[in-house]
Image (cartoon, rainbow, N blue to C red; front, side, top):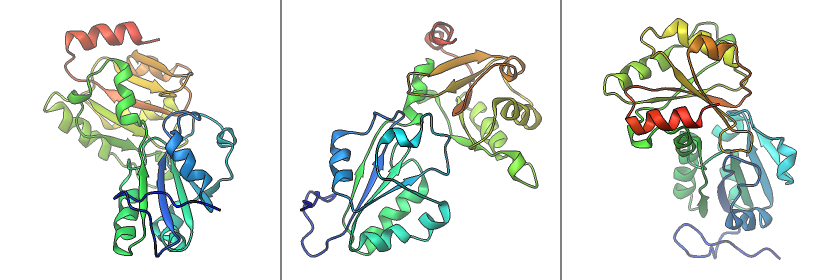
Length: 250
């Protein structure tokens, strides 16, 4: 018989069978915490959000009975309905609260008196420190869509770069699923005028295959940089950052 997990306030649910577990997977297939694994074992159903990221490993490597969930299903709050009477786990790459949608699930669970628990893990927002750049010097994070998936060419990421540059802050750009490095660089060059001489690409962050590239955009276009990767547009570098990135790059 499954034992109920503690809720967010440390109490065990008494009148409801259901629970909602938001579980961060971290950056690698072996990064799930021991506490999160216990919650997964007690779950009636395990969902995986896999529509926002190129996983750096095969989903089968998790060795779990997983049901992929699409954005429309998640936003329709299907999981909330099921969590009223079942133990439901939602697996999320990186940290469990790295997207607004997941916070909305918590708000709705709270409104409907459904017990929930959040299991945090490493995310790209902290792993980028391995490039040698100091986290407190980053500005707003943005994302780069794949222009091939749009009738127009969304360039909001260029506005974020400009805003961050105005306060000497680095910019983290999360690239869309399926976006190759050559296309990402082309989109960057077409939409952004004031780029530094060199930018950073972090590939397979937090895994054994992690690689850091620091080069001109044109040179990066010709390199073999596997997905998933992110782009980082640095601004004024501290001398420690300069030394670190030179030592840590490929």
